[in-house]
Image (cartoon, rainbow, N blue to C red; front, side, top):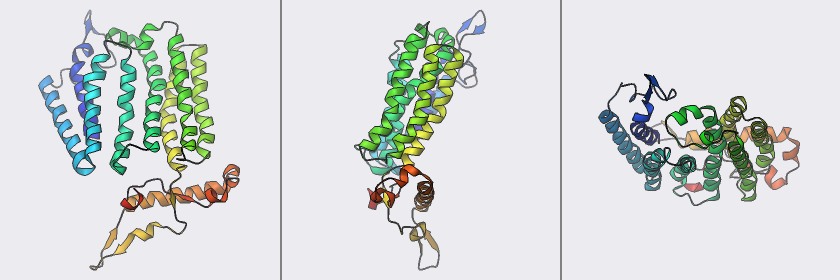
Length: 317
């Protein structure tokens, strides 16, 4: 995955090397990207292309051999979309942001495909939808703060054409509201317990509050608040979705079950990482349940069940 990301980023910088190095009266217009390796002259274009092709080959090859063909296809598709669709579109249409959001929604599908061999599931839908919707408040708030750079480089971003901030604020609010529905959808689809949407009212509510502040006063300070909120909103969303995932372990299951002695007396640890993480989540959830009034009021069938957040073994597929 890292090699695929490196490849996409490399091809992006190769394509944008001219705009990154634009000069006006001997002053570089794109301050944010002027120190990149290509515009600064630290590496040549052939060198960068060779590196990008090498990363593409390594990335898709490792994913195909170490995971499955579906994951490799998703990885290659993301390189293609980012390099040959999203990057050129940045100078042609504001629709580039929506294409970029599709690119950002694919990595969670890659992870899910690597673990399960499929992306045809409600979990995969929620994960990719979360990344897709999250990118709009994240990117539009960033684009508002650096719209002068984008305009100087000829990039077609919504905030570059939005002098009052009205269009940008409406987009921020619209996609933040859409993002806030996903925890409820996750509960409705039977993926998580009701605690996930309940807790999401706090962190997604705060995100919408920052969007409302930007709508009231569209300036860089309020845009920065939206942007900074998105930085912790996404990892919290992912963590709580895993934490409240309805995928259970028997009460007596333990990480010690996967440690066995071989005939030679050596210890063979099967899926030790998976079991260790599961054990930590199970113990933590048990403690939190004992302290939480809402969990104490849940039905016994949920109260007694234990969660296994990672289902990578064949028995659980």
